[in-house]
Image (cartoon, rainbow, N blue to C red; front, side, top):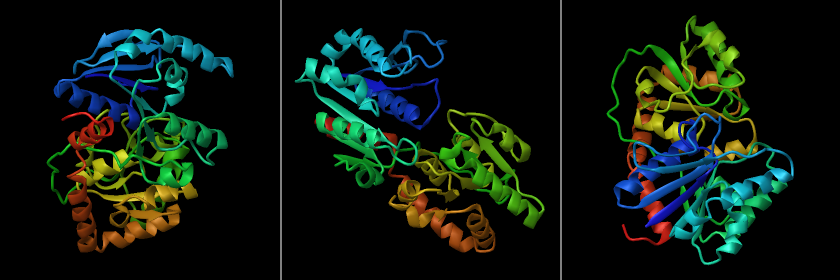
Length: 340
């Protein structure tokens, strides 16, 4: 089968969606399918078209990002790939159904699907809800990453998932280089400032609390002041073994922490993020709090209640073992109605 993926960014751009798309494309290729990814050339340093090491054909484009006319320029660029669209048996959009909108009518019998990843900031704008509803209605089916999407966007998911991870053998140790690891962008979406506040509070109480930060963003300077920062890392799994706890609040990072047998501490600062965390099937196996003060107290608590922590870690690990990338691909195959 010829499969076309549309994704705003793709590797070497690093992020949860990018990793998701790259992983499923690689497995689809191994299963005998042909896969093409159409994506933005995010820094104009990448090749316009290439075949990566996995065999995925990548087509990159650039366009002027201006108000109103920007979407017209985007559609003109997508039109250049009309031959690829014609040949595709399946077209799958990752949060960017708007890219494909005019072609839904040019190729009305093409099977097109959408994966909705996360949400577009807080508060959620009505325009974002409308765009998602149009995407849902004009798609032949969809995958929602998180059931909170049903509540906040009114989406009726064909399949709900919480991401996937690679199975790794976690290194068991009682001695860690760091007390905690943070993985993600250094911005408001990941609550890095609140996590840094936790580190300051624990340092005051315990005299020492070491944090490893894997990420980059607007608060890099603040993070460097009190943490060891290594920047964005494509595959952070190997770093989890160096820390006792995980400060993460996005599905992919949470799964990676689970499979590495780490107790997860997550902060939310709005009602959407609260549901994002608390509506997940594993919510009872992670520590979820609204403030850095509350999270600090919970860290101190689990510092003296290791048996309780170990039980949560084991339950989370057992659940995460079934959330493999192969199983994720099976969700896509099921959605598309293809034979495995």
